[in-house]
Length: 104
Image 1 (cartoon, helix red, strand yellow):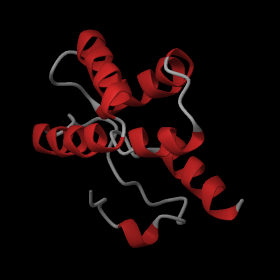
Image 2: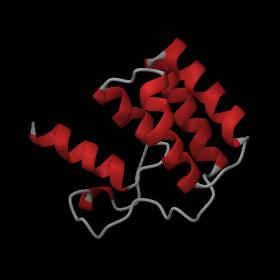
Image 3: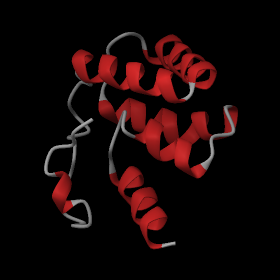
Image 4: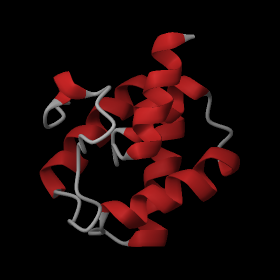
C-alpha cells in the first residue's frame, strides 16, 4: 500500500491524505484484501463495523475519528494492529504511532 510522499513520513508538515477528501474505493478495497490476509477474523469484524458506522463511502476525517475513539478499545488492537489498520486513514495520529514504533 503506497502512501503519497511516503519518504517524508517524519516531516511534521507533510500530510499523507487530506482529511476533507473521500476515501477512495480502490484504496479501501486493497487495504481490506491485505488486512484480511494478515488478520482474517479481526479485519472482517473491523471492516463490518466501519461499514455499519460510516457506510460504504466516507471521508478520511470520519475514519480517523472512528479509529481513534472506537476501534482501538472495541477490538483491543495492539500497537502494530493500530498501525496496520491506520493505513485506512494515515493522518497525524498514524504518523505519531509510526514514529513511536520506529524509535522504541
